[in-house]
Image (cartoon, rainbow, N blue to C red; front, side, top):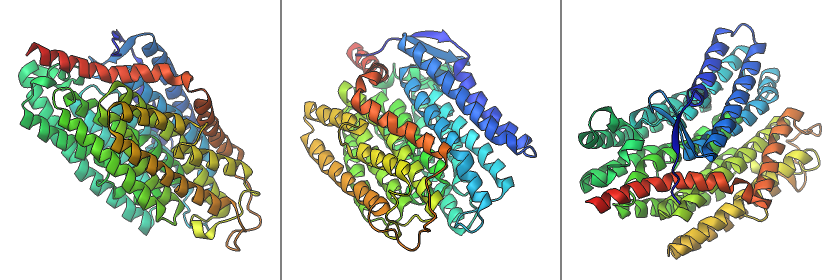
Length: 512
């Protein structure tokens, strides 16, 4: 059912942007005090998590938090994404200190760094988190583009953090392809604003909450062109095929905590931007939804087939992320209430499971110094916690009960069946089986069999803080799978927030 929320002025949306931004600036200013960077990052991420929880509780009570003259907004949909970004970011920050300091202590490992560059890492990490939160909160269609582009710049510098040839090449490719791709989103946003402002008048044409009231009156040619620009632009950022070539290199060469954020939440922020903009045209222009559905199915198949061919652990996980974003588009492309609900459910579950897998991959690399699947083996006895967490993430992402991925994929398939899209359901089930083969094969290569000579016999479990971050994610995957009712309410309200777009547009169509 559509969600109706009452507007409440609040400082919380602004604080969610200003706190991590301020922390990032302070880390750069206090660079001589090296101990402050971890403390500031931890406190800022914890504060953002607390604010996100408070904001989510408010939206569950029927409130819509607004700030800066409706420029920032936390409705049920934004609250879900903000809480997800804040939670994953907090766990990544918890994971970082021991992992990143290991890169300073051990100059013999393939990727090492210096103490001074750790300050740069934490500073840009906080700014990256701030830009993602800003994108989730923005109700201004042009500022939405600006926030997404700002997250590209911040994350691009993190992708190139190691500053060697491979990292610089990956960072350059990342910035070049995403900047060109996201420019199409700018064209789409400007086109929507120009058309909307001619109806609404003045600055109201900038507000997404106002644009959805008049989207049905847009000319069909404008809708087709704007939708194409927005899907290509934000779809490039989301890793949607065929706009995904940047993703494997960026995820593979970035520091593992950054890879977890890129795959775990940044891709979801881009999909969120697509939902906020492209779905404006769903009710009055059904071909837009059909195209999104077809693109989602193509993406999930191609991503898994590419993952099947990888021997590099992080590249395999990166291609798997491409596939899983296809499932999200499948749900959103159905254009139904259940489809939207299932797509958002998979956004949550993929964020948890894929962040877990990347952090587990980082733990393996931390302890063994190896990331090639064919050069691994027998680590289960040496790293039991990491082994358990990796298997939980792999099975969750494959949709195996009783884990969370099973619940969201089941909801997606039921939504597809109800909508009569049986071809998408069948291809989705087949792709899930391929995902299971890809991830179980990787787990087998890493943790079973005989330990190769390339791995030291002194290899041991990752540090406690690294394991703690992974265990929290693993427990969440299990808990949501066993008791999914715990998140039904926020998911229903978030899906209902999207449905209000459909209702508003349908009402406009009826009046005409």
